[in-house]
Length: 458
Image 1 (cartoon, rainbow, N blue to C red):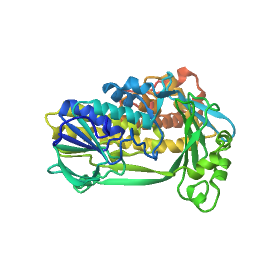
Image 2: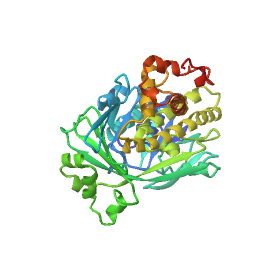
Image 3: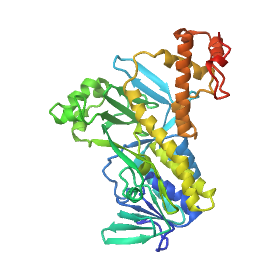
Image 4: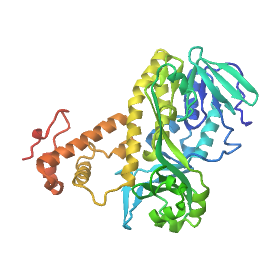
């Protein structure tokens, strides 16, 4: 391997993919066997030869949608060997209690994997795929949607590369997305008032089989186990406002003292926390929402370039991998690329919007856990036990199924309404009612217009 790809012939490729990150590599592996030569253009150096300073989260989470893509591409076994199975999240509460929440009711884990090692496997897989060529150190300055072509700049200068189609997999700050904006796409790029630092957590003090988090209302610290036994920690705090915030630290308050005040337990188990807080980069979180993902038969966006989201549901990468799988499925089922890209856009935009909303909401749920469960929380929990196939917890459906994210969100809202209706009609006493009474009070799932009056409860 020379860092410039395998020995494929030069010339104009069928498809240019801009961005050779995780989603770009997966997309190339899917496309080349079906639709001809693919050239991956990446502005950075080959990370297998020159590991870059890590600015993104060190750990990503693999769940069902991600595993489906890795299995399709034949790399699931190789990836699983470098993963850690996590069976739930353990909240370390301010009053000293811990609260363990399983990720699934039947013990299925999600899997933590180091982004760098996963990226290496996917780049190797892409290079080994006939028809795929990877070019590093290639910055795409613009895209001509009509020809189509990309204007590429490297250390030798600029050149125009023509092709049949262009796919943008170049992240939240996508350079190629501008071509779609110029054709009328409405794009919202939002920097959240939330930033994070990656913190190394030593091995031996925390259960290595679960994700750990310490909620503090306006801030949160989380730690994900690694295969080495160490944990990758992340401090999340607001950028602005009073303490705890990075603005307060810039204003003169000591960051390590602020951390110790809100997170005494992590402070006690990370001996060099003050040094890490002083030296580790502060990274911001950006979300992207785009109402158009495709242009005719020549252009499409995938992954963070069209739906960057907050990381708190662990679905950003999984959703991007699913984009690639759905894209090729739509192309396989369509007569031409125009119809296939249109079907892809229609299939994915509502789902991406739903999981983006859920991801942002989940941060506040984790950072502000209630001291006691409400009647609605208890009743929701009982319904998932009494009707396990009908009422599946939201996180479980996102992580362990390939159901539409939009349908998951709609069903969750329906469950909220059902719980509110039950409490309004029967009062909080229903929370502790016998199972038979609760079953009788709960209307059947069909027809969809069922109301409480349809139930047999009196």
